[in-house]
Each structure stands twice: as structure tokens, then as C-alpha cells.
Image (cartoon, rainbow, N blue to C red; front, side, top):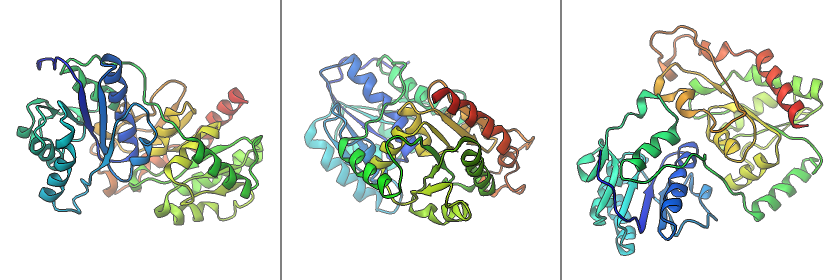
Length: 350
């Protein structure tokens, strides 16, 4: 066990990957502030996830750094170090191991450098073995294991998310433009994901939207980013009266505002799923893949009242996106089973 850091006064947390990962890791901010109420906490994240952290009053600074590999690593580490150094941090906590982040904290002369012992872990002076690929506990719990190793007492709450009044206003205007009024019930359907091995078949989403409309009388709102517009278009074909597409039309804050307005989220394992859970919206999540490190044990929607579908179709070794069986684990999740849960959850909410 590592030695406790005696007093955390000025700490920077670094997590520069995608929406779900960054959102789940914000429990670190809450835990540090709880134990050290007078401490100052800053955050380094990706441009992609940045707006999740905007208007959080418990953060002094939010900076962006690029760990995508598109930029020269040494230059990017130097640039980040130049940002961090003048702030005189006593502690850096690196939540996604990356050579560039480790270098930047080292160059910035931060005395306590906490993280995982990989990707140039020798640049850190307080580190634990990275066991997250075992997938034996939830991602928030792995974050808290790291905090615990330096004497920060972990909390039990999940991540929280704020929307902001301007995003709520602009969202309301966009909803009205699509004839969706304050009184209308909203179910969010999110069919996309960056990885095809995480996408429930689009025909099943088409069928689900039809049943939600025909049997529950509720229009679905189909979400997606700009890259998913084509996928959403093919799902919307023939469903124009039953659903509204907001694919590529909202920024991240507006997505949060929309989720907050909804009574239910149905979708794949993706960022908005974690956002919905953080906003207290019931989630039905569909997982594929039979790999411990990406399983629902680690990545399920955090909190109570959510339902996860994850079928084991007996693959000995999961090939992930290179699946030779046309993602039969996803195909094994039936529309009937999902719709039954939708119906039950809607009845509970309405």
C-alpha cells in the first residue's frame, strides 16, 4: 500500500478519453472535495468531453489535451506542462495511463504523481498495478481504488451532471421546432456507437420504435452524433411519423438537457447512456462482446433501477469488432424482451 498524501491542497485530475470514461471519473472530484473541502481541483480532459465539465463550480480550471496521437507527443507534453507548472500543483492524478500525460506531470514538477504502472509509469512516484482489464468491478470503483491508495477516502455516490440554463433553453426551442411540447413524454433511443461490436442491429431499433409508438403512443427521439447520421437515417426510414431524429443537431450540453427531459433511455453501451444514468434517468442498455474488460460489470450504467441486456452466446474467445459471427451476442437480444422492459418502466414513470 502506498503512503498517504498528507494534505491535498491543489490537485489536477487528468482523464482525456471519451464521454463515458470522463464522466465516470468525475467521482474523483467529489471525493477529494469531500475530504479536503478547501482544496482546489482542476481537470485536464479531451476537447471531445470538455463540455461535460463546464459550469462545474467545484473545478478551478478545465484544460484540454490531445492524447489521440495526432499531435507530436513531446510537444504536446511540453505545452501541457507549461500550462500546469505556474499553478504549482502538489498532486496530479492520471486516470487514463498515457505517456504524454505522465511526461507532462513530470515536466511540470508536480511532487505527487499518482497513476497506474504502465505507459512510462516510471515517471510517476505513486502508482498501482492496472487491473481494470480484469473487469471485476465498476469503472468508478477502479477510480476510487487509485484514490484510496494515497489515502483519499472514497465516497459511494455516482457521477453527477449539470445541464446549464442556456442549453435547456436552446433545446426547448429545437423541440418546439419539431412539434415536441413540454407535456410530451420523451423516450430516447441511441442506436450508435464508435464500435460496430457494440451496436444492436438497426432493424431491431426500427421495430422497437414502431412498438413504442403503436402500443404506448409515445414518439421516440433518436440520438446520434454527426458520424451516426447515416445510421439514424436508415432507422428513421418509414418511421418518420413515429420518431424524431436529433442526430448531429445537438451539442453535448443540449444532449444532457434532452436526457434530463426524457422518461427513459434505450441504447447501446455509449457515452449518452452514462449521461442518462448520471441525470437519474432509467436506462435500458444493450451490451455485446464477451470480454471482461468491456463487460457490463465494469461499464454498466451506474446506479439503481437500470436494466442491462448482455447475452452469452458461448464464444470461447471474443474477437470484438473482428467478430466472424455477425455479432450473434447482440442479435440474441430480442425486441420482445427489450420492449417488455420499456413498457414496465414507462408504466412505473407515468
